Image (cartoon, rainbow, N blue to C red; front, side, top):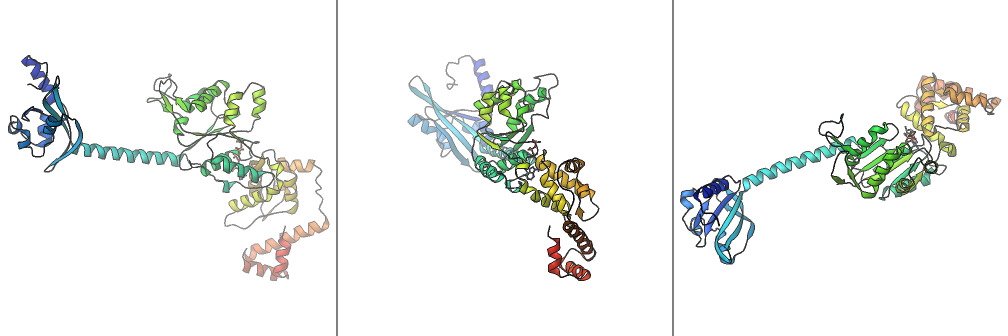
Length: 455
Ligand SMILES: Nc1ncnc2c1ncn2[C@@H]1O[C@H](COP(=O)(O)OP(=O)(O)OP(=O)(O)O)[C@@H](O)[C@H]1O
């Protein structure tokens, strides 16, 4: 075995031979004359050549087109050379063997392409599986709403939406502020869907709804065994789940103070480390935070970190309350009636009801208005919503305020007329034909019927 420099004892050579035989790549060694000195078992497996037919023979003669003898001539290494003999495909690396300055032989290492093909197929399969899983995660964590779903444009809402559309295309963090029920979460969904991350995960977390002891492991994840109740295999944190997508931190004003420092670190370093873990993982996430609290006041009271506040409010978005845009109220009412009464008969509001809804201050904003209309729809037994169908809090509020509940005679007659007309339409059907019949029945023209129904 001249090919193993420095070995002299026979047992040692046997041991080396066995070791080379157990290697998963084919190995062929030639001497300086180009005569094959050694092949291992895997070489014979890959090429189908028997050891007895090749060892002791000049390689160039027994394997036509062999590239290994070139290493003897030019002393160069070659990598990834493709060879095909019959049905057998393989890739070889070749290198000269030196003793001091002198070339004493050459060695080639070959790998069957069948195995490479097999591994490539396995890799494709795994990649497809990953793609399917990513798609499933993406579908589960999809943002549902777009700017189209945001009702209203008055009282500054239009310019808020325009600002938000620009913010969606920026990589700055976004802080949405506004009273409860103004649609901050709706904005967060729309911001994600408008961005170029729309097809990637949108991960919302409500910082007020999760006990502060759990919030850290929800966000960062943990390694197996990092605490007594930790799950086997550990847990992937929401930062990691939101990678390449958006993390929506709702009610950020309620995030515990010590966790705020950890969040700040993630935003600065753009990397996370699991609880109990050592590895830092780089992440690429867009952060949208929302709160109905006055963060500046919380900063003043040392309950919110100033540095985090500035980090989060890359683009601050302030959603106006409903009381500043009461002209939008009819839009919400139409939206709810259309949604709840789909396919059914159109329900109308008595004139005084609309006046009351516009008088009320809506501390719960759009959420409260939408719920109130849903409530009134389920309370009315006719095709009209009347004052007493409204939730008690609004009804009582109205009776305590100075809103004139007394109607003029003209208003009362108009209300009664409308009621009779709608009852008649119910008999003949809420279609053009039905309305014509109702007008005939009441002895008025179709135009007058439409006129009288206008609220
Ligand atoms: N402009 C709007 N257009 C349509 N629906 C709206 C609008 N604003 C609020 N809503 C509806 O009101 C409800 C509350 O909205 P959302 O949860 O987005 O408010 P929020 O500001 O995040 O409230 P909170 O601060 O209490 O979490 C939702 O059902 C939402 O669809």
